[in-house]
Length: 106
Image 1 (cartoon, rainbow, N blue to C red):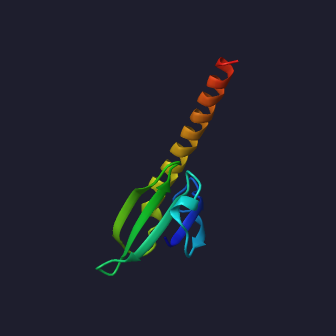
Image 2 (spheres, rainbow, N blue to C red):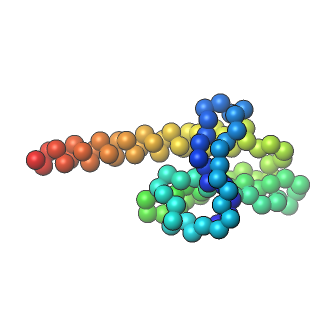
Image 3 (cartoon, one colour):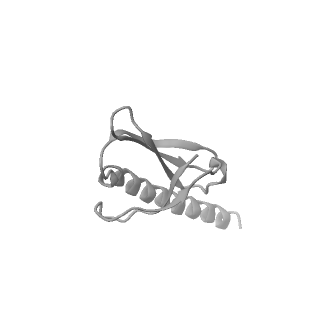
C-alpha cells in the first residue's frame, strides 16, 4: 500500500494534517491505531481518497471520499480526528480493564 501514514491530526480543520510518506508498506507491519491515507486520480478531474485503519487483527477501510477537488484536508479532517480520539479512548479503556482484571485475580 502507498500513501501517507498519519502522525497527528490537529483539532482545528484549517491546520495541516501531519503525515509520513509511505512508498511501500505491508499492512500487517503497521501498529494498531495507525491510519493510512491513499489516493488516486478519479474518473473526473479529482482524487479518490481512502483511509485505512489498522486494528489489532486486521486492517479495515475506515472511509473513502470519491472525486475530491483541490485541498481536501477540510473534508477528511473530521473523520480522521474523531477516529484517532475514539481509538485512543478505546485503548485506555482496554488497558484499564486489563489492569482491573489483573488486580482482581491477586
